Length: 305
Image (cartoon, rainbow, N blue to C red; front, side, top):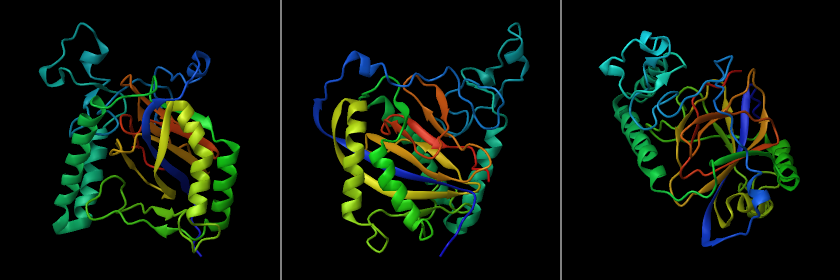
């Protein structure tokens, strides 16, 4: 039996489109989509701030903005912008480049002679984050929405969690994988397909998908086919999830907060179709729907326990 404190457990579900035929949705239903605020509210800020890509973490470029908001040209409109900062986003979050450098150093040091794979993974992540979203068809106005999980979904998942939460298994990420800082904050998985777990197996997986399908279909206006249902991933103190987009054929995804024991909210950062970052906080029973093929999503701020 394994008992962990300071955790965040989330069910991860992803879908593709089975046909090009859209479900009918009325104007009223379309307007129900969450209208995001004008600014994100990262956990290290008392007030919301507005930013986009390459501010909290590298997304379109291999480095983070160092154009700090306290620099003279950002404080005084009469001060000209130095050439080094031309076209660089304003950085309101502090020295995120050092944070990222430490993140990468941790990976390289951990894997030693194979540490170059950390850099290769990062190059691939950033390249796909830049290339893929602009070539995708989008199906919603902003690209994400937070809702309360349908009762039918929540009941099934919560029961499975309560019965198996102490039987989680360490997740294997592979050498040089930088999508999480797994070298210092281990993640665990409780697979819904594991028949050794109480209630686990193909019938449970299908039941969860059947319960969630209509909600995701109504949101996207598309007929869906199940592509991936990872199970419940458990993150531990200090965990980071690098912002990324999902590989095709994953198009629309859902994250369900199953349980959490944290000192402060651990937001899901999403970059909507408007290019603005938004930090979505979640309580157990909350579900975030998002177009995972084109909306950058991650948790670049460490989980604090």
